[in-house]
Length: 169
Image (tube, rainbow, N blue to C red; front, side):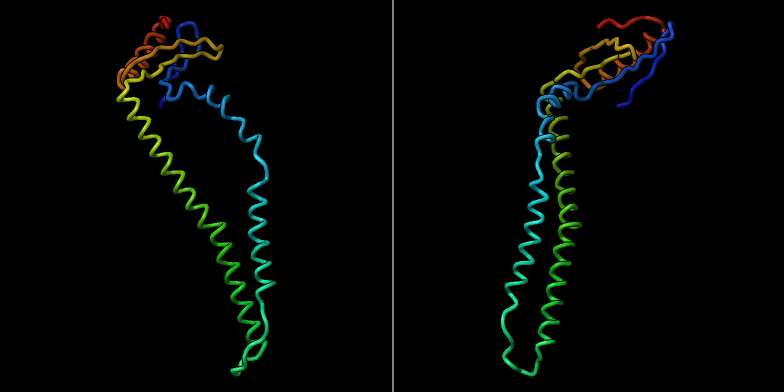
């Protein structure tokens, strides 16, 4: 949401805003350590799938043909062409289609969570946090029920700061 920048009569810069997720820092502290604990398992799994494809290609090239007018060179060329097409299809899936699929899935999950959180805020009437802060870390916080009321309170706090009045938290 838009942050309103205000300079009071004493020359202090204030930023007044409606906070969307006031508990983010607590959640990040609690659940944010998972990135440091990640290992290279995804890279190992990718290497294993490529090695599996190479092993199949090495072991599956069985004996010769049963005649029929085709030479061994033609069979090897067809097998090589099929192998190259298979590798190209796997590479296309791995580096293009799978990331696009995951992107669409992530977007769908984010939109569902956003809709659910907005509905939950409206139904359970959870208050919005309106805060005014200065670079010196002075902070005034108000809890307001209703989105429009929070926007009105943000504008009222900005106007009172312009007039030289300190908002009371």
